[in-house]
Image 1 (cartoon, rainbow, N blue to C red):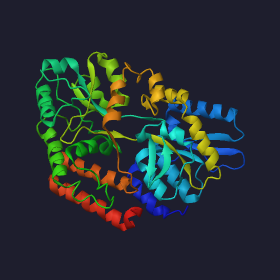
Image 2: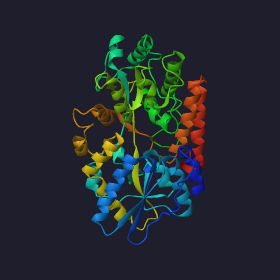
Image 3: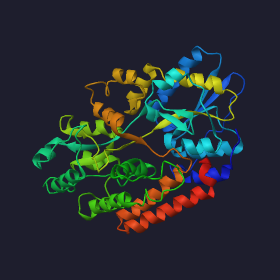
Image 4: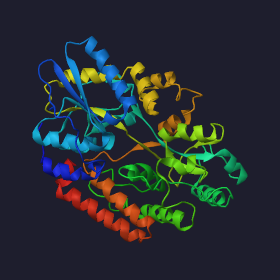
Length: 427
């Protein structure tokens, strides 16, 4: 596979690389040889998830002539380590990656198409299979979704209708709910939208709202321009609404990170990821913390999708064996272990049935339902890191009071210029 200009790719990836700066203290090099398959993971600071990875590798090694050697990195330094290794030709055989960055890394020549058993792929949720230009480059053992968490007691006190998965709030109902909850004496704001979060959060959390209004981050028919979709009438309506939530005092511009304002009773409602639900239920009791679907802003509810996935480097001499390992990893017992360790739902329906939290009647079952009904992956284009960074800046400006049309027009100009300067990224 021809490797593209790595310096260019590294620059394109910079927004996501802002997740961290320093590399691992490890001095070992990637790239397996002989009977060893090298494997890098971002779970160096996540003991629970790393333990699952280590167990899968231990079991695989026990029945295989090829032996997998794990090297773990802190998430904050992981992407930088990958880009540096790609530049020096030292990528490992197997690596994990955040789902939306996959097309950039595939286009850059970092990744090889997978050679997995089609039956394994067919059993997986579509949002956990990373596709780019009709090839599969990555697979994820789990996924999650955004949803509205709300205190049942507050909704009842404010006489607000409690929506079901199939009967979400309309835009008008959502606005009325935020206004009514803001007036309750026990709370400072009606909702925490999570705007103190950083990095990929803003695109993951708020682009589904844009899409529900009818706009998008890019024209997905061509992947060559954002003009008319990000700054079209629906995009402008979304931006104006987002700005109004803060202007009307329904949400704080400076909430505590991690949904803590909801857990501490500052707000009765928050826009949260599935991984935050159990903590909230521990704070207020499962009966008082409702998992509600995303509002329908006009074209149907949307929620984000695409979490961490596994891929294989393009220069690996062990693509077939590494693909065999990824198929081995997708067994239900490991997917359930992943789910228990991360709080996310497994990638196969059969594993979901065996999951304590996501099985029918489980505490997090509504998160799985929201994903299967309303999930939309972020644009599958090598331009995505730039799109995400530009969208992040535009939305911060809009929240601060900038002109919505001017902010989104500038965002479109920046996105289109990057795509043009990269000859359309192959589209």
